[in-house]
Length: 188
Picture 1 (spheres, rainbow, N blue to C red):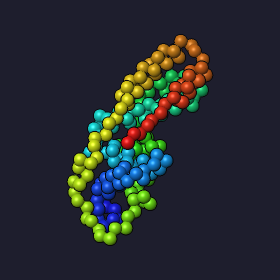
Picture 2: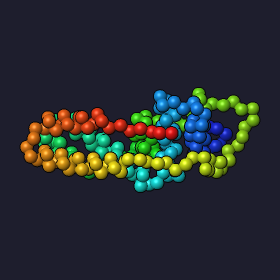
Picture 3: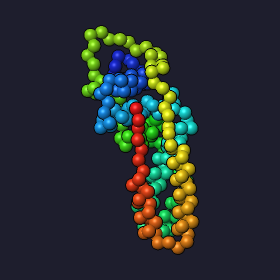
Picture 4: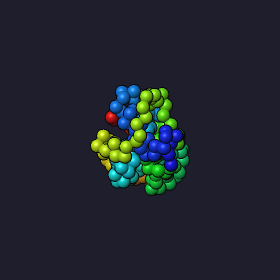
């Protein structure tokens, strides 16, 4: 699979775009397309361990579970949802799922260069394999395992709480407060 850029392999094109966006100073937090692309490359198997990838996808599944809990009204439905194990849904590969979750951007499947990356060099430099080696470091995932453990403990205590005969509206209100306090951040 190659791009239209004179036969450059798509994996090399992705790394090039990630390096260009990070080092050019043209990356802004408002530019979701840029953030998605940078996160995608950082979340690939080359720069992230499978354990970390699974951890962040488990966090996404738990947050989706929380969203479902706050949408339901009936206590029996809430208890059924709480008993379900969170399973991450993969639309594509892990890197795509992680980048979509972290940036809240679909990303699209097109990796064509856009305005900050379009260059008009006088001379075309062919791609060199391994040129990104040492320039992109291992991705660090901080706090996802702790969040997953805390979330599982909260669900267990909510199950105990809901079995004690408490009103479902009260539980939904408490979950709404928890949902409002969740935030995912990306640091460069």
